[in-house]
Image (cartoon, rainbow, N blue to C red; front, side, top):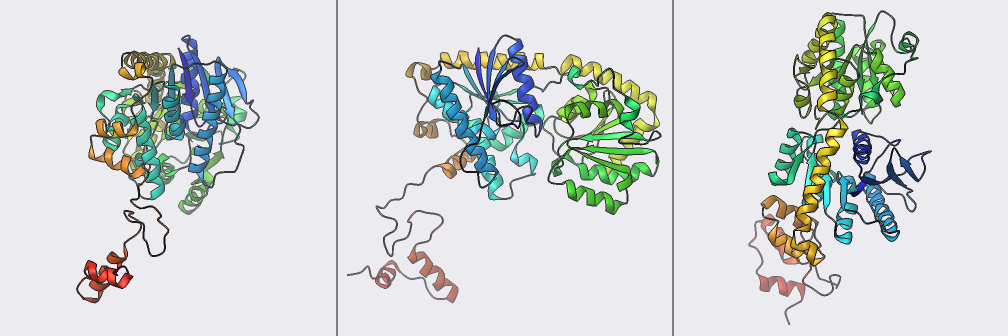
Amino acid sequence: MRVLMLSWEYPPQVVGGLGRHAADLSEALVEMGHEVHVLTGDAADAPANEVLRGVNVHRLKMYGPAGRDFVESVTHLNINMLEAALGLFRQGYAFDIIHSHDWLAAHAGKALKHGLMRPLIATIHATEFGRNHGLHNDLQRHISNLEWWLTYEAWKVICCSRYMRGEIQYIFQLPEDKIRVIPNGVKAADLAAPDDFQRESFRRLYAADNERIVYFVGRLVHEKGVDVLLEAVPLVLAQDEQVKFVIAGKGPAEYALKEMARQLGVSQKIYFAGFVDDATRNRLYACADVAVVPSLYEPFGIVALEAMAAGVPVVVSDTGGLSEVVKHAQNGLRAYPGNPQSLADNILAYLKAPGFAAYIRERAAREVQAEYNWALAAAKTADVYEEVLQEFQESPWAEAGSFPADGILAKTRLTTQGAQARYQDTRTMDYPFEDAWEPGEQLAGSRYFTSSREYASISARAKGEPALTEEQTEAEEGRVP
């Protein structure tokens, strides 16, 4: 099977978990015998085209005007993805499946689905609604609409946990039979420190010999709950002063978190390591006594899996997909989300009981290797591909050579009130007049403009006067002969 994968990021360009997911999944699919081409953004010092661990990676240069904001730059990348896909098509490549990751590849995925007449699969890694605990401004609503649009256009939607299945059902009103839950995997071999690793000398870069290390790695954004971890620091230190907290990662909250640490009076006990490469990350795992994932929102929590695979006992928030991966006091510990005292208590449970920590560490490593590996995830993904191809080939659309037009889709598939509202918000308005810019004319039918009669009626009501009749309005406007 030949798969065209669309991903905004791909190693070595890694911002969050999406890029690693796309890479690990693609490599596992290749090991199964499938051919995978990935269209992704440019990465510094990486070739534009290469075969990386069997995956055909096409990194796209962003020529042309820079986007005014992030969303516009993503749209620009999607256009480049279309350009690259057309180039591959011209070279004779025919793809069986188009697979888009998140709204960041929605435009290209939808266009290639209809243009190449191939079924589209979407993986939703997180939602704008979930990240922000609701939609609070036009940008968030726009991104949420793009997410919905991708799930609507996709034949099947893949998510990483039962929690995410419920979330996208609730937000996008997806039917349950359209969703497939496939947990992420982890490569334990990629998390091991080298054999010649000088542990003591490396460890002294971050902590004193008598200090135990509590380790966080991730993006420094609100949803990751790093502020909750900082509030837990003095609570831990009140019972055990010989602890150092290492926070690895970067993000928009970095300076606010450093200021928060200063105000809490614990700056000397926190090491902000900034972005760390994979080798440094692995060495820190080898030195850490506890790994924390205090997220407020986490669809899956692959960082927790990585820590478990690396042999570090974890404390996670009892939220989202983390609650499915970590079983309390069996393969890790779960703290109440957003609760610094609960987080501190669970960290101290490991620090005070090394035997218990060793038990959790060994059991977690075994479970991760058995249940969360990319070979298993890739096999389940390939099953979805096969299922979709079979359904597509048996559908009337394959014989007709095209998917239904938008008008038909609107009548046959947009059955819920929420879906109809989203579709109407994104369609082009048809104005019932020839020239909208004639003097004295308003944009009739537009929600952004009000007719002169309505303006006059509003003004009259404000003054306590009776509203003008249609004849009076026409006379004022000079439209009565």
